[in-house]
Image (cartoon, rainbow, N blue to C red; front, side):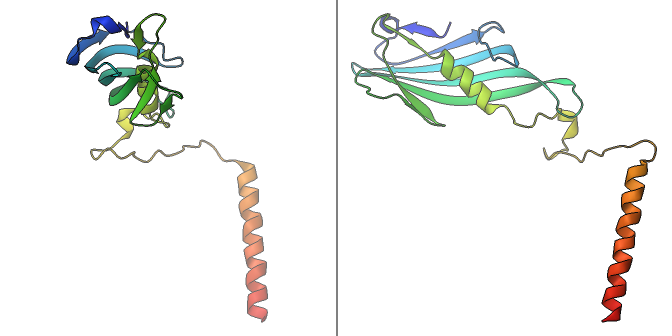
Length: 171
């Protein structure tokens, strides 16, 4: 789906819009819901630059409530395919790759998948746990009944403070 024959890409500037189905990408532990990818190609004799913007939703599970929710992803990335690349490189803005001369194709599936995965939050919170400003709301821990071990620790701590106050007052 995200593999293009070099001869099918016109010289200079061109663009395409592709719809992605939920089966087009394997996001391992997350469920891809499909989406749209806007592709911009710029082809010369020496390189092909592919810039893309991905618009999709990924189903995540909330770390607090274990409720599933859809997380929107809209990210940009750029891949430069060159003939004379000795070492492939990548950073947060783009990547430099070699042409695949055996098949005369370029493939951006890994870059699209990685762009989506890197845009997912580390702490996955359901949208209901955010206020109007987009900040997480407090999440209280509820306890039922009394824990005898905690009461003993509190009494022990109180006895220590009392002893320390005696020492302070004696000086």
